[in-house]
Image (cartoon, rainbow, N blue to C red; front, side):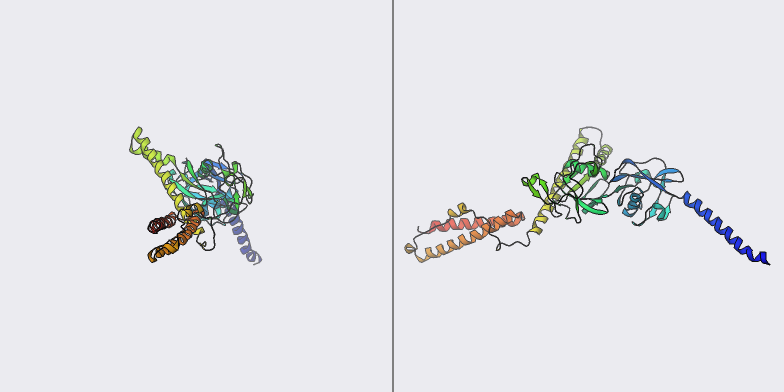
Length: 394
């Protein structure tokens, strides 16, 4: 009877031992490691490239079907970075071998793909859907990332905080580097916070990239966060404070290969293809110019709402006033001429107020339509003044 009383405990020990061994083997079998391949780069601050995972000893790619920024952040954490965004449609090149992972549901707080739920390793994706990631950089504001183009305010993550890039010295070289990080072959630099004002710190300024730079950390700059007061050649050697409302850098990224492939598929390799290709680039440049002008006008209008003509005293164009100032002999006038003289004085007073408005609108870069209307009113008053002077007996 005593042996029978110990038999349940022996069975439980055997079951627990078997379960522990089974879990150990299973967990080691399903362990996932990750790397970046294709047109990739990994430095101390940034990383980007095609995602490849090792599953059961085999390296393969990841389908981008259900991959979003949460899954990208988990991949970047596995590589030693803090945040990531998903780049789809094989922007970093097509992989080889199997497409191993079809889907995974991750949360940004997960530290590894092993922790994500609903991992699916049976896939019917092709390498045209190979997923990529860009770590510690993103496009924000009024932004969009598509297969053939992307645009937005450039933001970088440093020490766990997102911040902007100041637009001093920001040109096509820097835009090319940023767009390369997102998988595009070319880019256009935009300045003056055209994609909206950011928040948080301004991490980088006076960024200067050479042709060999693969990400912004390989470009020259004045240091992370050292942007409060600095030399800026745009403002005549004076110190300048980079702020979010006027100085955030942005980019428009495009992919030349996309346009070239489209032209090759519809026409032979002759002059017509180059004409079509040049037309596409011209349209892209025109759209960039239009977008820049629209953002500038909106920003100028919003920054001048609180300003009125009563609380400012702009410089007056005294030379313009002298041509319409008269000092007639009022004693020699009849009643009709006196009335015209009163009207002429009213015109002079109205003209001064209109000149104040014109000066305010010009200094604060108001919308052209408001400035045109005031200048038209000024021209009407001047013509009326000239007519009255000719009719008054001076």
